[in-house]
Length: 377
Ligand code: GMT
Image (cartoon, rainbow, N blue to C red; front, side, top):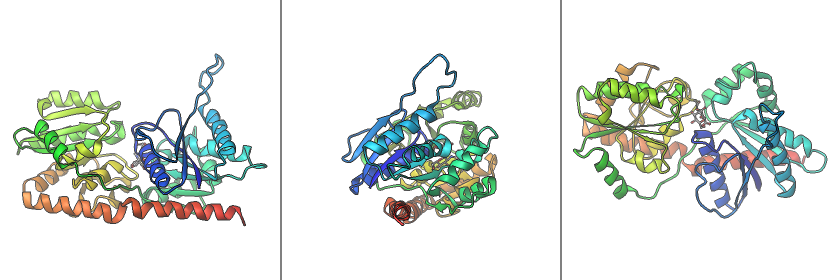
């Protein structure tokens, strides 16, 4: 198949999922054309069958708001026509599903094209339902030939908010085996925790929905009982506040803000417990990545996290904002080395048993085939 993969190139889960999906499909022999306004962050090497097309928006004095959605639609139509695409897979509804719809309409008399939209979270729960986007979000989702959501929670929310009548398939996010990073990860562990302290980790885009300050509060409470170090991976609007809170609590020397990092698997592997206190998470890809590294997760029970973080198997959940409970849960895990090891093993097993790339990619392929066969009826 020839597939146009549209995504945000930034340090966020939807772009990561789109990129990993494209790379894995290319390995299976499909031709993948990534379309974005910058190179997707995880597309950092050459792959056979993978192409990248950058969207540029004309700057013009009239345009106070340069119309990216239109430039994207135009680019998609051009690529679909000249690269002979079978379908466009839009990740994140706004504006990708809308631009893909437009491209399909542009080509409708001379090039059959299908559109699949994967809903990731805030395109529904936060941005998409805002009155300024509501109608166009609903329309663009309804117009897609195939719709997927990354969790059961998100599927239900989409139906509840938009009243979508078309079937929405739940296809979970996925992870793959990483080559053995034990040696490199030991050296990181030694640098961060020279005295063999427990390491807690957090990875996100540091937006308000992630509640990064809660991670600092949890670290403070855990530090009252045992020595720990914390790796804060990523960057975003809430970072300064979280750093300031760490200074206020006088724990800065224990909380390392590493900023954006490329090899997150390596860093996560060096930690013992991952913390995700989010206000809302339709899935929580970073938690799954931690679990795949054998790192159990202490998270909030918001949204789709309950489909991923299973109490006593892959970590523990607590109510949003319950930092005392989350601190207790962290302590419960790390204070018993035997239990910590058991939970580390079961987290990894659970992650691979349910979210392994080999289990998930066939679900997307199946959907592509179903949608494309409808075209020929
Ligand atoms: O809105 C965001 O937080 C970013 C968005 C993205 O584009 O990365 O994240 C969403 O998609 C991820 C990948 O499917 C999910 O793992 C995240 O849970 C989801 N974020 C939210 O629902 C807040």
